[in-house]
Image (cartoon, rainbow, N blue to C red; front, side, top):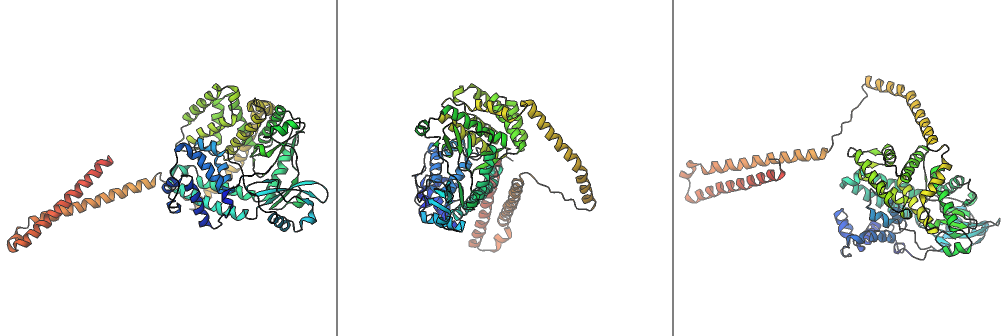
Amino acid sequence: MRNEQLHPSMEGKPQNWLQRASYVARVFARYGFAPAMRRAGFGRFVPRTQAEPMAESDLPERFRMALQDLGPVAIKLGQMLATRPDLMRGEYVTELRKLQDAVETFPFEQAREVVETELGRTLEEVFAEFEEEPSAAASLAQVHRAKLLSGEDVAVKVQRPDAESMVETDVQIILAIARVMERYSKGMAESHVVEQAQDFAYYIRNELNFYMEAQNADRLREAVARFDYAKVAKVYRDYTTRRVLTMEWCDGARANDPEHIDALGIDRKVAAKNFATIFIYQMFGEGFFHGDPHPGNILLLPGEKVTFLDYGNAHSLGLDMRERLKVMVRGLIEEDAEALADEILDMGILSEYTDVQAVYQDVDRMLSHFASVQSSEVRVGEALDQVLSVVFKHRVRVPAVLGAMARAIVVAEGVGRGLDEHFDFRVAARETLPMIEPGGILGATVRRAKRQGGRLGRLAMILPKQLSRLLVRANAGGLKMRLEIDNVDQHLHRLDVMANRLSFSWIVAALMLSSAMIVSSEQGRNVITEQAQKVITLGGATCAGLAAIFGLWLLFSIIRSGRL
């Protein structure tokens, strides 16, 4: 299915860093963000003429539209921000989840050049057929249907010729903005915005490497191999490079195409259940899941078979993380606030501002609201989002993959409910989790205890060696102590104010003393002219007046500071 909506930013898009930054500023100014940009210190990039500021309620939608206009990298940034409720308010997160790739295709001649350069052969030497018209266009590539000389129908994913330079330019702008935000905003510094931007840069650069996507496809295929109703397209490695990916062509009905689904005789309710089972097993069973299972990436076949497409966005979960996340999801499903809060605090990094008791209370309050909602309206993904909001509110740092998992569950729930209006993710999880963890909760507890015992054993083995090294360094004088003072800038500022006030006080005292000496100089009054005497009197009065003004101003500033 081809996207018809085009990004304005794709036409005549500037590649120069400064030009691109100016272009980004013009787009945001056009959508009413000029005042916010000035407050953030980017006023020099704001054009003189821009749209009037918009109502607060319109800003989330306009922010999404601005990202949509800025093109592929901005869209992917918005999709990442949709997983971070600590960085974006709830209404922005909801709006950003609507972002979908909608970009123009590039000419066939450019696609031919990329394929032939990468494969080192002409199209005719590799393919018996190669359709000039793309069958789909994504943010960084487009897909052409083709047939190999050996007869297999394939989908050839071709990277955009300018994708690498486009990504690198926008990534550098994002990193620069993140550094400014972290430098001047305490909240952004506590959220480690630069670290988040660097993670985003890492993942989007990986998406430029189609070898990584091929590897993801192979891993996902292994992850769902046990289900005869699950399919992941085969990758043809001989015809795959960094910029060209050749995969098996898959037919079927898109998950958001009910007419086609019905025409194929597919039972939507069974298809929704199969899809949910595969997705949950990917995430909690194999620890490797599709990060963007939206309807466009899901094909349905007769027999209620489910095919996953587009493997660039996939995430890994270690064994320990999987066990923790299963406890969290079980806590959500069974409304066990204590187990859920325990797991969150155990996996997260607490700050000095974290109120642990408040975390328990907020999670319990959230789950109480969750329990009061009618079963047909329950959204596990949204509940998990609320849990993350509680976590970030109390400044607990959790692994970034948790946000990606929450977004994936929200999208997967949407697919399930689109196929079956009565779909309930909780029911699907209750049926699938026992398949993943033999022995139920007891078995999971035993396995976790074994892992913890193994860690303690390894720690007991290395601890004596570490202590020995520490003592050797101490004897050699090699130990150094690093002292950090909280809010040191604030203390230095206070000292600076004290020193300034003291200096100012000396100036006031000097003016008062000078005034007194001038006025009381009787000897000078007897030997000088009347005109000179007036000048001296005026000078004394001036010194006295300045001393009074400065003294009163100093007294007022001290009283206003509350430290009299």
